[in-house]
Image (tube, rainbow, N blue to C red; front, top):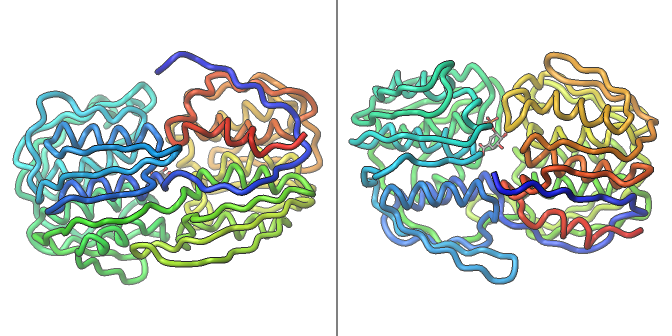
Length: 434
Ligand code: S3P
C-alpha cells in the first residue's frame, strides 16, 4: 500500500452541483477481459479510474494483450488489442492487488488456457475466500492449487474444459462471470444458476461482444467455442461510486445534486428505490441504452430521512452500497436494519465489523449480528478518527457520515479510496456547501 493519508471532513450544510462519474468498475473489468479475448481492437471511453481495473489491464498485458490508456481531464480511454481467445503464458505472477473481481473473473479465463499461471494479491485479497471459484472450475477440469483455506495465491493449470451445470451456493456475480468466461472455453453448454438475481453485466457485456448468452429466470448459459468481436463504446458512470454522493445529498434538506451518464442497470439501481423509501426525492431523465446497459441522469433533493429494513435479495442487490447506507442510518428518524449480509464479512474488510467499529467511534449506538446490523435512528454523531482498514468503501462511507457529524471527522488511511475512485475526496469537497 502507498503512504497513509488522513483526510479531514468538516460538517456540511448541504450538497450542491452537477457531476459525471468515472466508468463503472464491474463493467470496466468485464469489457477489458472480453476485449482481450476478442479479435480486433476494443476502444473504451470513460473506463474506470480505479486501481482495481488498472490491475486487470496489467494482468492482461502480462498475458500478451497490450492496452493503452489515454487521459483527458479526469476521463480515461483505453484501447485493448484482442488476442482472439489465445493468451500467452505469463512470465511472472499476475498481481490482482486488492481486486476480488480481477482474481475471480481471471480465474475463469485462465482455467481455459493451455498453460499454468499464478494469481496473487495484496494482504486483504490474500485473506479472501476462493473456494467459490476453485470448486466449480475444478469440476470443469482445471487443476487449481491455493494457500490454506482456499485463499490466494492461486496456481491454475488450465486446459481443456468441460461444460457443467452449476447451482451457486451463494449469490455472487463474480462467480457467475468466472464460470461464463470459463464456459467460453468448454465443450458443451455451461449453465449457472443462482438463488437470487445479481448484477447481470456479464451477460450484457458478452452479448455486446457478439456472443450468444441465454437467460431464463435465475439461470444463465453459454455455449463454448464462440468467437468475440471487438467493440467501441463507453462505460456508464459507476452507480456504486454515485451512492456516496446520492446518500450525502439525501442527508440534507436543501441539497440539489445532478449526476448524468450514470449506469442505471436495474440489477444495480436498487439503491434508488431505498433512497426513495427513505424519503429522498429522486428524478430520473435522459434514459438511453449503451451496449445493453441502461444509462440516465439522476436528480436528487435531500430531505428528512425515515428508515428501512434491507434483507434477502435486496441485500445481494445492494451489497456494495450497504456500508454507506449503514453510515447514514443514525441520521434517519427510524433507523436502518440490514440482514442476510454475512457476505459483507469477506469483502475488502469485514464490512460489518468495520462499519460497526467506526459508527461506535462516532458515538453511535449500533447492534451487530452475524449477518448484519441495526442502527437506531435519531442519533447525533460526534467527530472521530475513522480507521479505513484499507477498504475503499469504508473510507468513502465515513466521509459521508462525517458531513453531518458535530465536529471534524478524520479519515485515516483515506488513500485506499483510489481502489475504485481516486478523485473521490476532491469531488466531495467541491460539492459540499458549509
Ligand atoms: C462484483 C460483484 C460483487 C461486488 C463486487 C463487484 C462484480 O461481488 O461486491 O464489488 O463486478 O461482479 P460478489 O460477486 O462477490 O458478491
